[in-house]
Length: 448
Image (cartoon, rainbow, N blue to C red; front, side, top):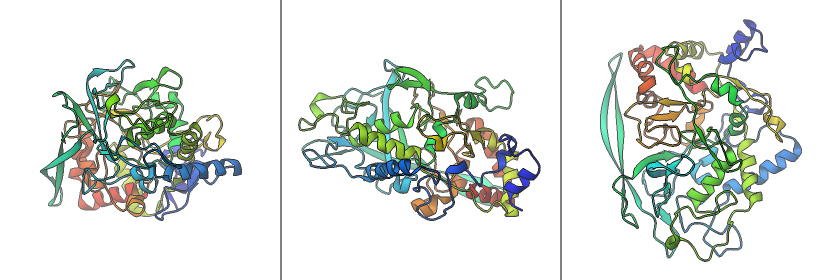
């Protein structure tokens, strides 16, 4: 009997909080039953014919490679940038790997800022650089700077005589095109999966806040707090949902920012070149460089990608691993289930019971993962809980198993061992597990 059937036989199937351990239909009616290299890039199967057409138009925009102006098609790249396409940072709609060459085109980049805040409470831009370092440039222009990384090894002992060597990266900026202030803050980031974003945006705010406990009133040493960020669309402060620190309120704002900062492409929400420096702007470009239609099609594409189904839920080892997941309190932050609300204009992602395994909240992850760079209400030690759905398909879809905000973890075990702060006890209990129990836990995580 499958885990889904087991849970349903013991509970009211309409109560999604009781059914929270069922994740086979991870995306509700948007679930795709594929475990191939294309598992992250398939449209939600419940899309109407009209919405499927729009999704496919967005797919073209997502994969489009931009070039420098003037150009008849896909012009406007740069003059400084990090990559040339959405797909370049999100290969096969999945997560990017840690690059062998940190300055090559990849999904890896630096967020940067100065101490303090901008006029909306967000990170303070670095004069001449903005809030993201662009390490590439078109002909005739100079990149803002190059990235540099060295590694410090840390050995961790696990029960059963197993040792794991972690690599802690130390980052810096070299060859900046302008002198950098000595107090510039660096936050390395890596491109994350884009499937299921519409479902996450459709979760009611009240459902997310129900799990918040910023003052740890229940004394379980796990808090969770919401980030509230500036929304340039409504020109109000809204709940942060996307980005590694929940620094943007919607897929639209996230995508507009990526076009602008990752590719140097202006759009109706980001009409100014990202460098914040007149001497490094392209006089041949025409603003906006990305049409509103193209931007909205790419947003729709991201909102309506299907979510890969969970797998092997009838495997006794997977079922046992799920119990260990609960015992270690992993599910406190990687909260299994939500029901989406009404999403205006996209009924296909409305009223869906989903299993993303995230609470959408910020948590203190300790010193080792700290970037010491605040983002709205998130401090330098806090990160938003990443969804776990699809994590077991990363190797087959993306060709690697790099995890965490900068890709430092080379597999799921390393990702767990980097957890600190509120997750320190869970991490330490993981280290004490027998080899068999650790294997079963990993099998459960890989089934999601």
